[in-house]
Length: 400
Image (cartoon, rainbow, N blue to C red; front, side, top):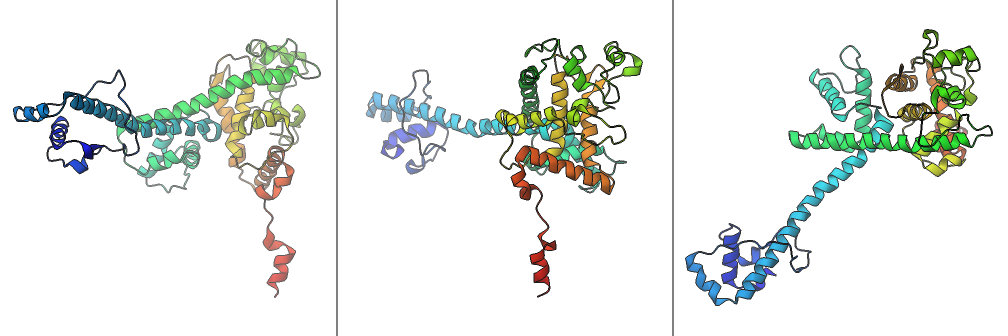
């Protein structure tokens, strides 16, 4: 393009862009080698070309139309070049927003990204080993959340090992947080309608009728939803209990210190064996499949093998289900006396802080149950491989 321009015009272009001494073959703009020479847009303003008195004769030697055409062409190319420079920034913003979707679903319920990274920085400043969860020096729950964040968000791993300007840092935090909050809000909006539809398909429909967009008739105002979110330490079949909960009687507080009935298989709780059937509720499983696989898979029996993180995600699903069944219209951490954050933390601790071998075996069996229900029995070898070194072939080989 530029090699065909007359030398006199090249001098004019040099002065227009403040690049004296630029040779004709090297006059190129970055990012433009693949672009066609498109005609200028009507709204594009041509770049100004300033000429000295000694150069007016060169301009008069060339046809005026050629100079004007060249200026217009240059203006278009500059605009296209500026647009191309913006694209990587915009694409990075979209990527960060999408990456943020996993934060509340798999990492933490309410924490902001900057708070988790601050906890990591405090860890480093105190000289604590990165795998050391010393509760006397750090916030163990928040640091566990940071480690999950670093696992699921590659941008965070890069961020903590690089020097970033404050402006760019704020932009990264904002994009990730908006993605996280947006995903949680989308799940709540969809589940509000979906859960109502599922409950209305029961053999005995709820009374009063549950509306998809209106939550007033849910919670303890409805016999079906009230039974599901009733603490298992109370007997919902007792009219005194129902009235006591609705009247906020001090003997019937509804708090996160008691598991809601929907967490248990068939909503049945055995005080002598409190973990029997826990986290095996039918509706809980259905919501998990709706969010983490696909809405249609919630109705299906068998799935292909996926690789989700099943610990924090079960806690997230439990919070979403509890909120969908309640009469609360908008998201809040504390609903009356029920603290969603404490509820979430209690579930995560149940899975991650199994201190005895029996508790660890219980969690292992529970996760096996979830994998079989969500991903199908035929994929069991993927999520629980056999210990082949203890089988007959390995034993025979060891004796040869």
